[in-house]
Image 1 (tube, rainbow, N blue to C red):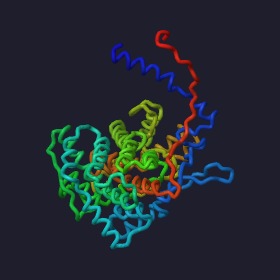
Image 2: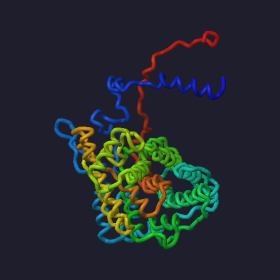
Image 3: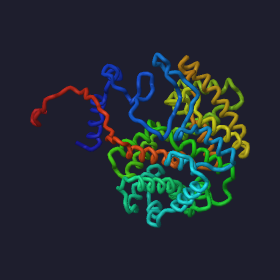
Length: 450
């Protein structure tokens, strides 16, 4: 049998062996996708790291949508952001300290933490050279490979004591921006035949500014660019223990595997287009709409094109309006609101007011058209943080290749915080859910009778 024929033979068998009807899940009481019938998540653990609130339960057990709230260690993220903005300073490093420790740092603690991170940001020479040699078009894949390689340079990689976990966590949070920036510059050099720039991080700069510096060089970004990237990092730093990538980190951590293997699992999860790649889809869809809508202020024309999208007649013909809807948030995504505020200022600075006005119109009309198309249930739908994050990254001159890696650059904070918690429960237990086998038994057939 030829290889191609063999592959086809095996592929055809999947149609029957993997075809489990949706109705069977309900009949057997299986929570498909770890979701309840009302689409809420199945409770699989407890955490003190973060909380995502999009609904409350009525007395009869039904869900009541409420304005979205996000908490880091019990602090409302909106309060955290407003406090940082009031002092006109950057806050990602402070957010990292909060999520790792459980409390806000004082000035001395924050400066020591920031100094530790900046000192840890440079890569060892061998690690740098390895990134320069890595081939591939997807930076998430290169990031995962680079994280696994950091195991080699760790003198005590398998130690899961609290002190060692904190050391490894700070090391990873600090090195993610460097790895991603270097990986992109290598990709740019290999794929686009552009000059190769490897800029050493500056210990006097913040994480956000260092990333822009390593990506773009001196004098190629503004103060507002730094502030809005810092805000985006804060807003993406954690999203509770139930999101797919964080759950992947917790599942692998429960086995007491090493930090690098566990974080690589989280990266692999986030890489999926249903999780970390959404803002790329949003940006592509908005670009498509800009090309196909002649008058960006014409409500009827916008409505008509949105209807085409919903009818699977336009863009990628999936029927999805990307950036609309969320698994938990029903009425509002607090991250989207905070990012949108500063995105408006960014649009003015970059001369992109018309593009921003179109996005606001799409936001307004998409929710309306979604309601008309899907019915009353669609009224409990809102834009999510991806709706504006792609616009922000593109406006500050960052390429699409780093959109998902930027998500990882922020979420590494939450991943490490949840890993530390998972490994320090008073009654630890390996995470092992059950699967019900629904394949009937069959007799073994000797080779000569097949």
